[in-house]
Structures are given as C-alpha cells and as structure tokens.
Length: 263
Image (cartoon, rainbow, N blue to C red; front, side, top):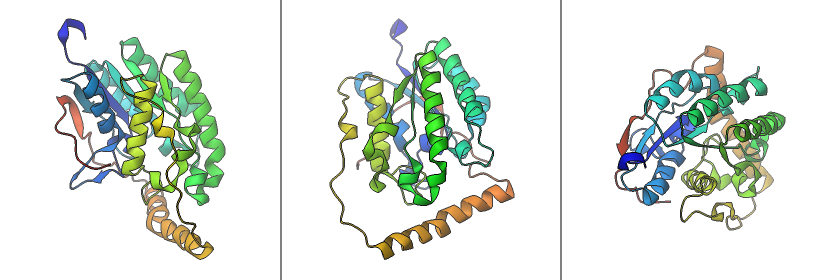
C-alpha cells in the first residue's frame, strides 16, 4: 500500500454484514465480513478492519449513516451488502433501493476504494412462504449488477450458485446465513476480489440430506412462522427495528485478533 501503510477494509451493510447467524450477542458475532477480513489479512499482514453495519438498516440508512464514516476511514477495500430489509417492506421500490446502493458505490470508488457487493439468492427456495418475493429479488439483483458495472464494483454472484439456497447455508430464522453460509459468502467475495488462494470452491454443493416427510416440512414452516415471521411482523406494526439503539460493532479500523475455531 502507499507509504507502506496497512491495508484498510471497511464493511457497510445490515445484519448479514454485522454477522447475525454466526455467533451471538453474548459470545460475539463473526459473519462474512469478519471472515473476509481474515482472507484479506492472509494476503496483507497488518490489515486494519472496521465493520460499520447495523442490523435492521435499510439501504438509505446505510447510505445516510455509514457512508460518511466509511469515507473518513479511507478504505482500500470496502464491501456494501444491503437491500434485503427493503425488499421485505410492503412499499418496496427496487429502483430507489438500487439508487441508494449506487450512491454508496460511486462515493467509495471515487475515493479510491476497491468495492465488492453480492447478489441475493432466491428467498422462495429458502423459505417457501417467501415465494411471492422472488420477482423483487430478481429485479434488485439486476439493478445492483448494473449499478456495480457502472462503477467498477465487483459482484459475488451468490444468487447464481444453487448451493446458496441449501437450508444448511441458513440459520433457523432463514433470514441470516449460518456459520457455513457466512464462510461461503466470504469465499465468494474473496474470489470476486481475486484474492490470492481464492477459487470457486464456495459453489460446490453440500452432501445430500435425507429427505423430510411432508408432515415434518409443514411443521417446520409453522414453527418458522411462529418463531420468526410473527415477531418480525410485530416489529413492523409497532414501527420498531431490531437495530434500534444499536451502533456498529467495530467502528474503528483495528488489527484482527486470532481467528476463532470452527467452520
């Protein structure tokens, strides 16, 4: 890097970037951004890493609340992954959401950062009750790809990898990746950034699972609706967010500690 300074990586986004589904609020969250930082640190010893993501944030909130602080941190590499919270809202506007993300892409790339983003897999294959959202996901992905192309942003095409909808890639809430899923997303971003040692192994399918009976499948859907969909709808009706009162878990660029054990 210029003047021998360490590489700086800054992550912007919502709960996925914060790391929900990979650890917990007691032991700490890891997530794909932490894991990508480990990939970067292997190639760039002394890496400094900041994570500005906050759960529940909409794309416009990422732009309004995270872009300015990110620019102040002078990132060499940045990831921007957001928009899922928007597409879950009744008044979703794909063009407006993509416009917010494009503004973030434009500002970061203009400041000299190498920027990466990711597309979203078919949520209807992850949670059958979410099938009506499929056209929204497809439109948002198309607009994000176009915006990324206009600004030289690299795209991890997780949407086009069948393994991305394997249930084992997702936590029990089906909204956040599991530890394995976060590891695969990090590997996909590492490949998109052409990091040394990266490849397309993240696309490989997982071993076959025993089939579930119809009764178990129905019971799983009912349990998911009661345990996760109901509380989420309740927050929407109350006008609250899971991120209310929360701040970024890693607002300052810091060296990485030892990588946790596990997947």
